[in-house]
Image (cartoon, rainbow over all chains, first blue to last red; front, top):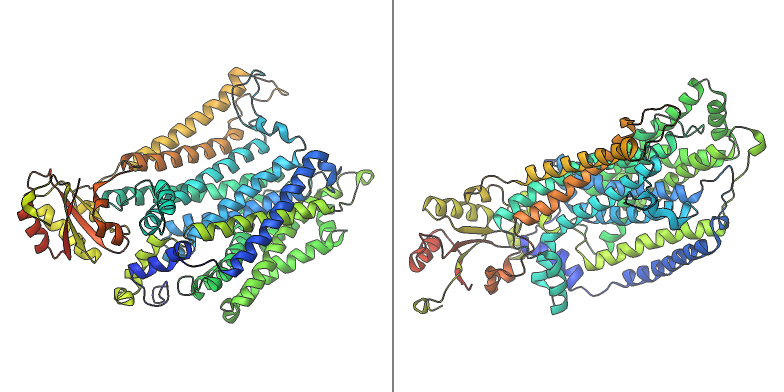
Length: 452
Length: 181
């Protein structure tokens, strides 16, 4: 990386500030943004409508039944929380590893984390069937003298997801404060100056403040890095602690974490490629960024492939009838189409990125990133539904067929995610301004001339 | 600016265009005996706080304390619930099944540490601060996203308006502004 510049072109402190801040403050609304906002707004309305119908009629509107009591809701939960993990990986791990190229992509990836984790948190509440008791997961002094069941993965999950949401929000906000101060000082109207100023907390870039800020930011990175590993490990324990064949596996935590980073990096590419095209950010989010992310996809995708192999091997090696049957059924049973679909999408697709020309072709990368996300959704679907549909006795076997409400909530949640993201890129700097200023003097020593 | 009016000032603000320039200015101002001063920059400048004479920070200790409170609090909460407050004997299994308590203990350790890192940093920095005199300088407000500033405050024992201004100019400042309080 040393020889390739982290950003392209000649930029100075002022020009790079203008470039990013003007998207929020000055540039007129882009028509693609307007159309996107409208479409995602409609999808969001469908999501909340489906949620309202669910609360009216109950989980019977979904395709779930016994023995497939976990359906789309849990699959969507794992899928969304997994997508969120790449944002934390980029902002925390790559910060600790001093990978400066992260500075161009960490802000919007963190926003992605926040929205994805927030949406993920909704699913278990929808899934439990008695959502009005969801607060029983919270330990609070109550007249029933009840405590949550501390030994239950559901309760671990509640703590993991809430901590993850809060810490992601803290990390994101701390990163935003200096940029909010920039927006405050460059605001075009009194209202904007007031609002940005309120959240900027009076930040003025004092040297001592920066010193403490950097330490705090680094510590938050050091805290978020193990957190992200723990969160998806705990999510996987929701499955692995149960004795259901197909769930009960020690490979689950590492394989879930790799899968999470995998789908998350795919989402980063799905977001970055249109964003840089619409807002002309090719100099800041360069082809090198895309290429690096593709390399991460090869690595994490291969770990996921290794996870599938291990699952198959352990199914055979366990010498347990049920485990062996479920492994065989996964590849050749009723849901075999789903299994081979995920093998193609998740194991074979990323191997295409070994070809450098593919990594540097944004159209191909964009399409493949969508394929990977679809594959990762299929993975959760297959693990959950296929493992449950043929359990112990053939008398209780049952096929799961999703209903229109399953699909409405799934696609609606995608709409909510993109709706929030649309608002984010319009009202907050989508790339960290002050962290790019740090790259200016590193990448072009005479960058000041650029705005001369 | 009319110096002879001697309005009550907050300090003198010198403007520089490069991180290296403000670093050197801070070093020389410290060597000249100035202590009550601050530097402002659009991004972190490595070593700037040290040159101004502020070598250490308490944030790591605060963060550690937050983590400790989270860890001890979480473990206590669960052991208290399972062993003392509401013991349930399930098939003779141990009440204090601490391995099952590790996930939540870990999560709350991170949560406590993160809160202390955030609020500790804000508290020690004196933020939020709705008013600061340095924003009275129009140029600072307009250009703090691209320029570097050094401010020597009037209550520094060595502060002498004319002399300090001359000193700041001699450091290579692009401009020197008086900061209204």
